[in-house]
Image 1: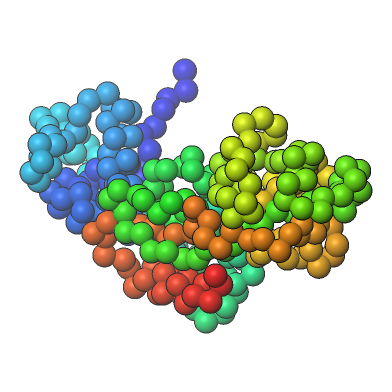
Image 2: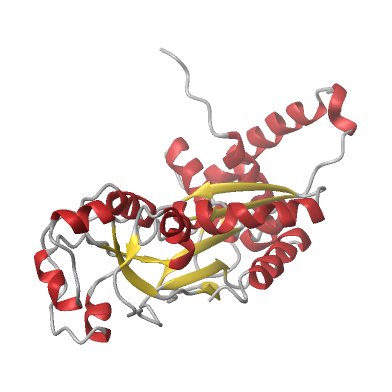
Length: 296
């Protein structure tokens, strides 16, 4: 039977937390968030099948098993540390890990990212993707951009930007259903749904006393929803930065001069509350806020 090895990143987190007697201090030393460190400790406890720390609201203390296991872990990590490696003298590059929604990454982050990397070539940026409204636990990233209502307990929350929402459709779809001349004629259209962009608020702005659509295709990725609109599958709500290229190419058209100026959701950059950001991470936060200050 193949042996299972304990995750090394969890062993390092365990050793750092035991040495400092503080999850917060250990997290800062490892350049991760306190929640990420706690996740690694729990992962290791699941692996060994026993508790490593006593958590009673005070400073974490090792259990009897934890003290015994720490000796083994320290010996193993020291062996790895002492092994000679030719590239050991190479400087460690500052690194930022950011998790963002897919559509935001494609249309809003990547077109701007070169301005940051050009100004700070010494900093590496790792971009990860998350699903809005579903991935609600802060990952091991330094930062996340979230699309939502902005109410995230225990997280520092900085509003990044919001955009007006408006309905679009493809010319081919409009021709197929005989056109849509007024908001009331949306009754004959297929309305594509998304929890990220509900119709009810736009209905109210357009003077329609309609309930939120409850049937039909639901797509909780705004980029995919816009693609469904382009393919002629119905009418969908979108925003300027996402659809401006498709509108310019004539692939979709804005139906009315009615926009929802303040959607229920916006983009926020979040990180663990009380965390002191590393200089390169703070630099990236400042860049994000400055980059999107005039994007609303």
